[in-house]
Length: 84
Image: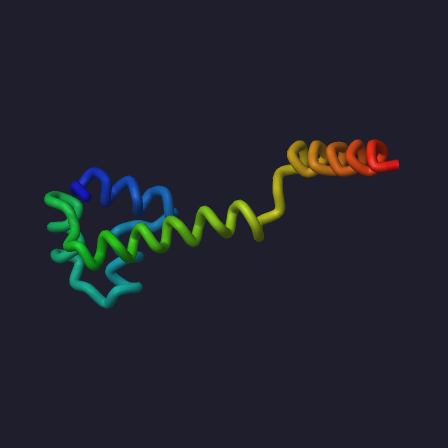
């Protein structure tokens, strides 16, 4: 993971460098260095896990937008009508 990819991962999570400093109890200079040259393997894996959890949350927990919800209801009703 490059520094640019590290910063993109933070953006995707809605985090700032200060947030990851606080969450991981790191000095801001450490995270600044990661933003320039990339994080170590363990930090990369942590961020990838957080991104995966975010994706799962969006897919299965977070309520879909109204338009998508309406589409899902219509699909469900159509399937019920076809089953009869």
